[in-house]
Length: 191
Image 1 (spheres, rainbow, N blue to C red):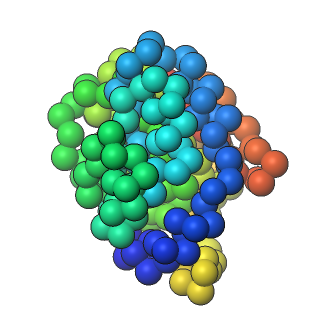
Image 2: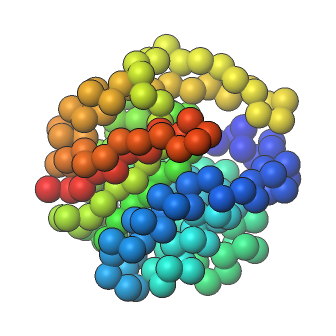
């Protein structure tokens, strides 16, 4: 995403909090040690990839921003990363034991969000958990907001629509909750 290339330096210096880490660690604790996890929209690798790696898992990052990936490779040198779009992933089907998409799906146009969920379903194994964040109400036209002076677009579906979209792609929604910063987490499991 071109917008993240524009704010990469700022983001790398600002994203030092632990938002999302408890959820990533809970996901990590549910997996067998050494599991292969796809971090969709891995950004700089801090804190999500690092939390998963520190929990004993192998992580592969995927991000569309070359500037974010450059920082990821500095921060998480032991974890490979690939530049690409989640809605057209380069990975073989059934490769991953889990997937995480923190702060990604709400940046995608609604149909691309559905394609992203379909691709994650294709790439993860049966029984694999998928943890992602997004909005919790239908906002298909999108809302604009700024981050460090750069305009971003945010779209989402309601919880019930996500439940249906996930079911259409062999996932069962098992948990939805918000953290203290109003980030909505969805946890699904592939049937």
